[in-house]
View 1 (tube, rainbow, N blue to C red):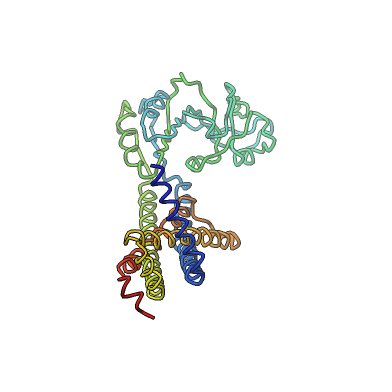
View 2 (view 1 turned 90 degrees about the vertical axis):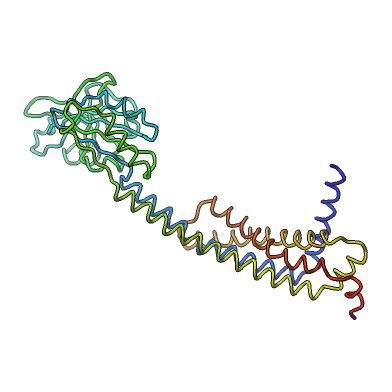
Length: 366
């Protein structure tokens, strides 16, 4: 094991010596590979960044939400939250009671907003950490509508107190349709009737499965009094965008990698022809064909690794200065690895040619 490691260290030192001795060829390879690494990140990388931004925007539009609307005679109560939360693909479940119009009790204003009772798997999603029994939480839009900018006061409906407003909530994108949103959190053991249930799938592509599972688990007394809707159009749009942009980026990357391998191969083939006497001398001194292939490939690998890092750094700096979205680190690292691998692969055919040069013939050439 020690002898093998020692031999590899000697091979790598010799490969490094080749890199330093062949300064012009090493510099050309460095520029070529670095330029290709930067080109991939500035083209396919831009596409990947745009894809991420568009998909994030589509996801924020509520493409993962499944909405169940129940009539009063449906017999659907708050226990539905526990049943639906057991679905593996579900991230969040919230059950809302019937809307009740309420106004600002302090000012007696005529502007009303809907108050809904709520039982959810995680109220922290709405920014509610420690709900107080009997209190309401309102969104900024609802507070402005009711004239409660300081989040203080109480709500009344037809002169009857409904609840005191004790906090401000954050409306997540999938509940934007309920704005202006005011909720009165219920205890987990509440048996209040449900008017609307919102089920949030973990991934947009899981919406169809979550819709089917939700339909099977709600178990209303009157199935005709319940409707289940989702957003399959947005989910299909997401899949289309991901397929189109992702396919274009992959095709562009593979094309550039093939061009890089061909250019590196042509460059090194010319170098082998120029230095054929050197390779012939190595063969005459006992170097095996596999050693020649290893030396040429290892020297190219060293240059390509450095060039990929430099090219990637220049590309990321360019995107940052231009204020453009950057691809994820996974894409950047994968690009650097692929660029290095493509350049090294392109060096294999010239290295095989170099290893097959007849030492006696090459040493006779003046």
